[in-house]
Image (cartoon, rainbow, N blue to C red; front, side, top):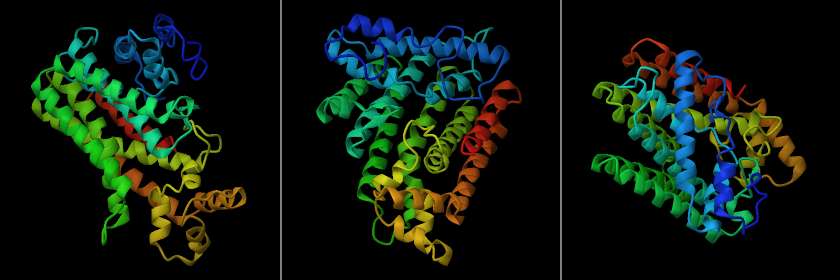
Length: 363
């Protein structure tokens, strides 16, 4: 595989594996999440652990059938932040990490489970959203078919389950509850808010289920399999859920404020597809005369180029965007407050820096 979206369906599985291993140099962390990553000994320990995760991911998506390997490795080849594995590895530093910060094999396996689960949901989401692009590359459903994308997601769920079986029944139970929330969140998003249900509360609940739950489990698994104290596991799980919601909110805001498509998709994609994210929901729920034109434009998909540009410009200067930004800040602050239970030191500083990064990445 020479790059995302460039390999034919007849490419060999061994080639896919070999090239996958070349995506990241050993001297740099495979995560692309950004400037909150710590430096010094902690940074080196995380970098080494992430390389172990990346290697395990390569193994996990490989199959004896070349096309299955290609399809399963498609989104991984396109990049990604490795946000969930990173959080698991960072949480593990609060437990029984080795003298150089080396984490147990169980921590690495749990981190891989969370990333595989996340990747699997992306394949399914792209089918449901009829997306053509993911991470700047053709989505699996547009490159192949919806059936291939759905089945590839199922394959990744199966590989995650196989790894989970070695982590014990409690891990399987936690993952099952997480998966239940992922599916519930997707169903709630698909069906929409019920009669009399506040659309903003519904939206935030969907984000907690669809995004926050798996980020929470990532932190929980990392701390648990490193033998961290129970009170730390509880605090980090709550931290993960709140910072996970904040991260999704920041993605939604980036779709509006970004000038260059830094999220891997063109700015205003959600507007074109009629996806009402938090700023739009605030606009639709309000009665500010200054936003009357904005409400008119965003009442449905904005497909006309001129109207799309107008809606995007109005949103960028709107009070509704400011209100949504305030909600993002609130979730980041709530996540940071959970760190009161974490001992002072570089791990706590890195987690606090993540809260700051989630907010500042939208500016």
